Length: 575
Image (cartoon, rainbow, N blue to C red):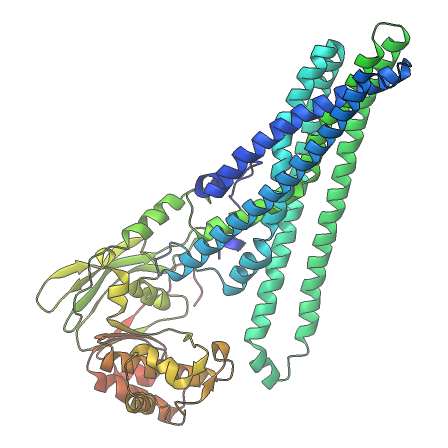
């Protein structure tokens, strides 16, 4: 899956993919920069008013009208800064909500629209982690990091100009020392990015491990191994805790480093101002103005560095999101994959597959980051009305070929052509996928089951099927012992693997009989079934009198086939 591969996402302060794909981000950036500019002006005004009030009070002028006006102006400036800060937080929170909603919709849509993918589909546990606590990392990315990034772009520039106008020497000192903050921020950022990346990977591993244990919990309990998994979950959880605490320690230490550099820089300005005031080369008001204003030149940069771990976590999540969305910037070379996926979805309706011949012509599938192809170049012809058995060692690409025929995976080489009974030929890459799949009855290696009843799940093959037809399909699939009204829990948790497989075969048979399907694609439909049930399934496949492609390992199913195609394992792959 993509999340375990090499990271090739953006390492810039602001991920350009978010800007390109999200209107909410673009509007937020414009608003954020405008608010930051106003706040920078208020920072200068506030410092000038403080200096005016203190210098007038030190000189003993009392509450003259000028001082009263300055106090009133200072109060208004403080209130205005507080109001703008609140507005900035509100804008940031709303932008985060809109962006998260948009990304969740895009990820779910990408996984459910059926468009062929260049790479393997991500694991469900990773998607759950990503769409849940993963995208929530964007809250701090928008609420803390990006506002400070906007302030860091405007406030130091305005402050340096204001200080330089009041005192050129102090302005030059601040301009020279500011790059030190940036230098240390970059050094700290590299370390922080790696640590937060490790923390995100640890959380993903924890989600994977927990999901795997849940999936196999029934088998583990049957063999008395469930209690031993507690130790494994505890170890993975402990690694997650260690990475989290390590990231927090690094965040505190990075803040300390930036605070130390900023303090030393402000001290240089303060010493110079103090000496010149004592010697009479600078007025008290000018010195106070520069001294009060100088820390604000460093503050936004310090806070950007302190919040860099929020940026690193947000970009780690964005990298995984765009890996799923096959975005052009997610990694090098994705443009070809996106082009193939777009090419594979056209509006041309699929022809009637009754009597059609399906030819697989040199089809191959390769995934990025893998040296061995998932499916080496393969050529075969699936003749109408005949049963074609696909055999071969594990890893030779049998299930991948079925995924190509279903349109779940776009081939990286070769093509699939369909010749209808009237002699018209079609390229699968030009056909509408929904129309194509409506003419196929499919039994995957791991059948999907919905919460409801057995009848509800079988009726997915033909929504208008009667109860009698459903019962007949169950009997023909060797599932006569399954009551159509039996309750099915979420993901078929209360069904055995054999029951789920028989239910899927019944659904496929009903799709042929009532759903208009003329082709059956079955991936090991008799795995885990006893000999008597297997005979029922084999008889039903023969009696269906449609085109059948079956991935088979069991000898009886292979013997029933009219044509047997043996795939060889790709070079470098283990059998």
